[in-house]
Amino acid sequence: MRATHVLIEPMNEELWSAVDRYISDVLVGHDAVLDAVLEASDAAGLPQISVTPNQGKLLYLLARMRGARTILEIGTLAGYSTIWLGRALPPDGELITIEADPKHADVALANISRAGLPARVELRRGLALEVLPALASEGKGPFDFVFIDADKPNIPEYFGWAMKLTTQGSVIIVDNVVREGAIIDETSGDPSVRGVRRLNEVLAREKRVSATTIQTVGAKGYDGFTIALR
Ligand code: SAH
Ligand code: DHB
Ligand code: MG
Image (tube, rainbow, N blue to C red; front, top):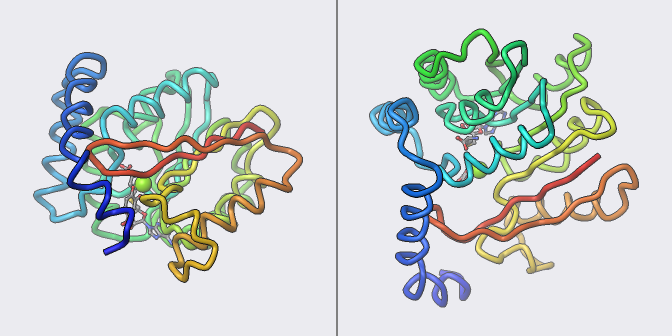
């Protein structure tokens, strides 16, 4: 167990979850579709690693603030974040989400149709590093908004594709970039930590984007989002 984890967990995880529940109850609200989405995800044995309701609404709000008409998501899981993002789109908007695991993709498709979004949402099956070049060669994009939330060691490569598939004014969000504080360890051998640190090196020298990272606590622990504006 890492030191950060020993210090944080007994003190605060219960409180973070209680505050998340309170914020969800007061500001996010309950939604039969999203409840059913998570139930279907659990019933199928998928991992409980979707964004929280508060975070889902944050993604929705950011996409609306951007006025996003085209959204790209890398890492669908059960489609929970996909549905939040899909709901931010105007009627003629489009969302493409990429998922490598066939079982996750099956559960997500059922959930997306449960949410009444299929016309606006296209799920691409396959490894993101194969699907992204295919999207580029099909002339897809530019996307107004990109959510990167798949395997963490490849985050810098996904950011590179996001740059190819976006334009000035686009927003790129990356999930799970704080990792219980482990990202400050420059000697870390954890491939996910290394992926995030490589992203930060890219961001530090990438003149076309302005970015920051926000640490988050809540029902899914201590982590964070990187938010970049192109
Ligand atoms: N965005 C979702 C959670 C995604 S979890 C939500 O918040 O609701 C990460 C997902 O990325 C998993 O479903 C996993 O199967 C998928 N994934 C992992 N590696 C991948 C890859 N190389 N290409 C595409 N998807 C991948
Ligand atoms: C994992 C992936 C996620 O996108 C997340 O939010 C939490 C955990 C994981 O692969 O373990
Ligand atoms: Mg995530």
